[in-house]
Length: 209
Image 1 (cartoon, rainbow, N blue to C red):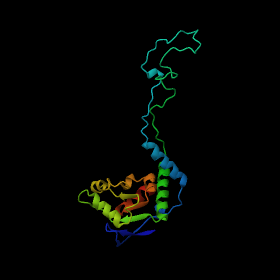
Image 2 (image 1 turned 120 degrees about the vertical axis):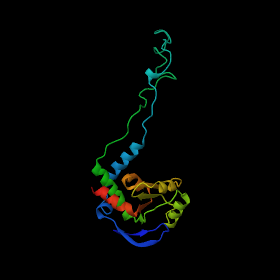
Image 3 (image 1 turned 90 degrees about the vertical axis):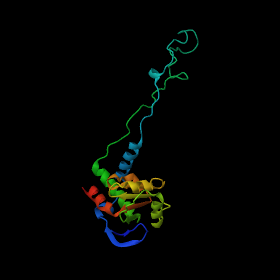
Image 4 (image 1 turned 120 degrees about the horizontal axis):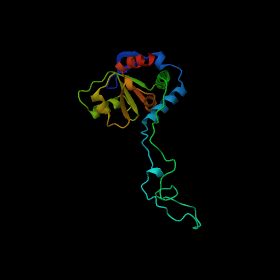
């Protein structure tokens, strides 16, 4: 697949970029995508939820009433889950939600997601950006020129560029990542994938090795 390279004014340049068929034109594997997205979302969970069990409640342990003769069940502590303010039975405890996915499966998932975007014609190749200073209005103008300002966009740059990242940060539907940070969830979550010219070869090298 060959795509024209656009500049920040939204105009096609004379350059073209050939996308590797082994990355952008494979038969998508939906199960690999499912596993990779599941791992990504699981890793976002903090797992710090916690409730106190009866051993952790600070309440009196004095016997509430005599053992027999009251007509009710016996009770020995206000920490019991049966009483208001008592400990919780089998409450949530801190845990790690992360799961393991093989590297080859993750690579296959990203290739599959990129292939879906290529089939949908949702990939734009952009000349490498170089902002002199963070400027949100300039980034928004670029999206408008590319006619994607009303859609979710993911810009992939070759290497970390602080000015480009800071320029996009205040735009809710825009996200910027480096080629090495690219993940399946972000690809599928964006309506349009914008690839900086220099990031294409990096993505292909990462996913073909």
